[in-house]
Length: 183
Image (tube, rainbow, N blue to C red; front, side, top):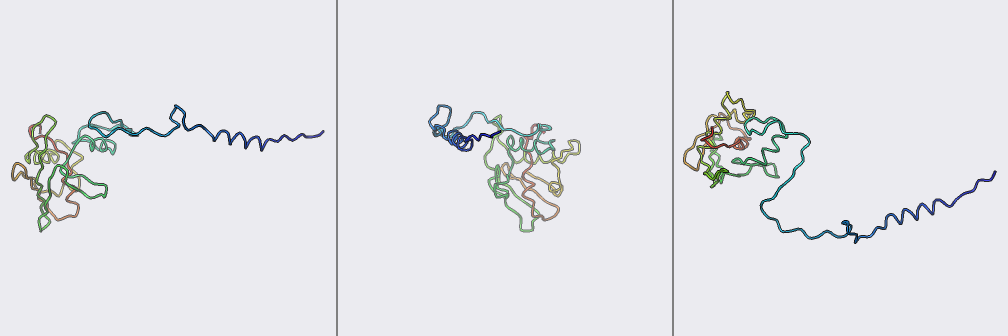
């Protein structure tokens, strides 16, 4: 019996070459993309997370996924930048005491969602709520435990006093803020 060989390799290579040569001007998006519109405010963003947040209460969340959502929904005095350093967000400036036991934050004009202005009293009341044992906030962590007091020294200035000088004190200013009238 004689085995007949077919010229399959050249045929296979020709088919692969044809498959790789698609038209770039196809109406299904094969061509160049259209220019994007100029950025504008508003609209809807859809963000996928691999799990649901455990809660949407900024005082009580404990999971990383809830934290990702809270960062998108809530502002604080400082925020961590792309360089992993804290920079003012609601705070216009943060001044460190020479002894390392105090931070003073001057607030920039900021408004709550109802239009009322944020005050230093709001900042102080928010921290008192975080440290309240009845609330049992997971946000009251190692850095926050070193805070002795948070005081409104002027309508737009808040002062933090610490039990000890630490390099990570700026992180303490990243706590959740709520209007004092709701605390």
